[in-house]
Length: 215
Length: 252
Image (cartoon, rainbow over all chains, first blue to last red):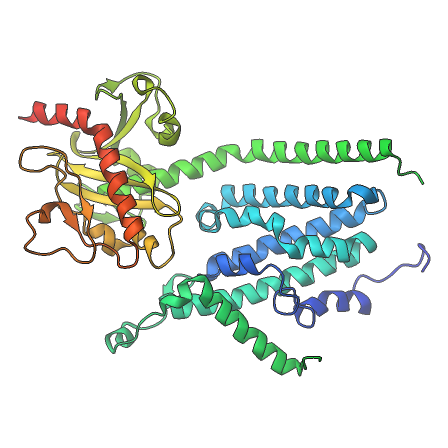
C-alpha cells in the first residue's frame, strides 16, 4: 500500500482491530495477561472501573506515541524507549489521579504505578504499535484497554456484590436477608475470589465462542 | 544504515529529556492540588478520631448535632487547634505548621530536634480532647492512624486507622468501625497513673478480666496485625507521655 492511499478512519480493518480484543483476543481472558492487577484492585467496583480507565488511557497514548516515532526508534534500544514512554504515561495518570480523584488513588495505591509492568501495555507496543500507523494503533489500544476494563468491571461487580453486599458503595443486599442468616462471602474479598470469578468468566466465554482445546 | 551508535545515543538522550520535561511540568502544576488533597484527608481523619465528623457531616457545638453544610476545611477550622511539642513535652512555638510535620521523617532526626504534632479539639475556646498521630508496623505494612484522648488524658475518645496495607478481611478489619468503636472509653493509665496503653487481646475480652479497662476485642485471624497495633499504640503514647504528664499535673 502506497503512502498516498488514504484509509477511512472507520474502515473495516480498523473496526476489526478494535473489536477483536474485546472478545476473540481479549488480553485478560484469552491471552491471560495482566492478571496480577486484575486480582489486586477488583475487590470493589469503583477502583476496578478507575483502573480500567487508567490502563486504557495508558495503552492508547503509549500506542499512539510509539507508533508516531516507530520509524525513528533504534531497534537495539526499542524496549528501553517503549518503557520510557509507558512510564511517562503512567506517572502522568498517577499524578492526575492524585490531584483530581484522591480517594480512589489511595485505594489503588501502588497498582497505578504497576501499570508500567502490566504485560498488556508492553505487549501491544511490541505486537502492534511498532509495525502500524498511528490511527490503527489508537484503535488497537482502545480495543485492548476496554477489553481489559470490561473484564475488570465484571470481576469487581461480582466481588463487591458477594463480598460486601454492595455496589459502588451502596447497600444492595437488603438487611432482611442478613437477618435470615445470609452472610457475605469473605473469600470474595481476597485474591482467590477474583481467580474463581475470572475462571468462571473464561468458562462462560469459551462456551459462548464454541472454543475447543487443541490436542 | 543510519542507526549508528551516535544516533542511538542522541535518540535516547532526547527521549529522556522530553519525558523528564513533561513530568516536571505536570508535577509542578498539580503539586498544590495534591498537597491540598493530602492535607484535607489528614484533617478528615483527625476530625473522625475526635468524633466531630461522621459520614461527611460536621458536628456543630451550638446546634448540638451533625450538620451538612460544613466541609472538612470548615469543620477543622472551627474545632481544631494544632500545635507542636518537643521530646520533653514542651510546647514549641513559631514557624512550625503542625499539619506539615511528617512523623516518619521526624523519627530520623536526633531526639532533641524532633517535633510532635498535637491536634486539640476545642469547645467554646476550651480544649476538650487531644488527638495525636499513631504510627508503626503491622504485619505487612506501616499503619497510620490517630488516637484522641479526653480532657483527663486517660480516657480514649476515638481512634482511626486510615492508611495501611494489611490483609483484606483479616488485618484490614482495623479500619472498620466495630474494631475502632471498642477503644472508646478505655483507659491508657492504670491505678498508679502509669502508662499501660490498650491491648487488643486474642479473641473476645473476658468480662471478668482485671484489666478490662485496658483491653479490647481482637480480630480472629489477625493476631500479628493486632500485636503491631498494640505496640504502635504504646510506642506512640510513650512519645507524648512527658507532655501529657505535665498537663495532668496542671489539672490537679
